[in-house]
Length: 116
Image (cartoon, rainbow, N blue to C red; front, side, top):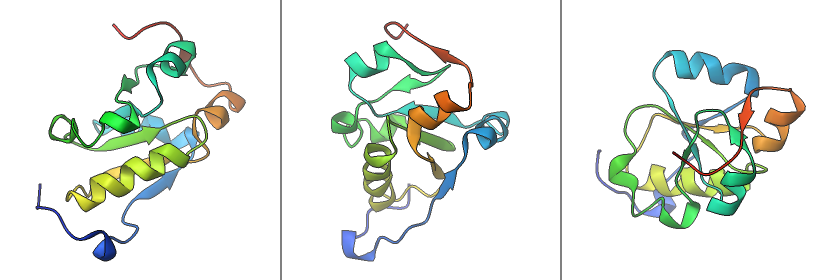
């Protein structure tokens, strides 16, 4: 990581990606990080997503390496998590446009249940 910057210096330096582009990111090694609460994660998520709730994302930031695609129910919490990661120096991060609801609308693979 490059170190942190004041929030006032953080600009949008991430991509909003559509569900059909997630596979391309995954093929390049991206991890799918779901920032929803654990009960929401258990109710349904992008197949293969990892559970890192928004409240814990700053604490677990050192575990989040490589390219990342962040997702939540609608895109709001994932945008907030991205802002925090950008402030901490992350640069290779993207946001799933309109979140899990759009993923479902595109009939893309989902899974339910607790994380393994």
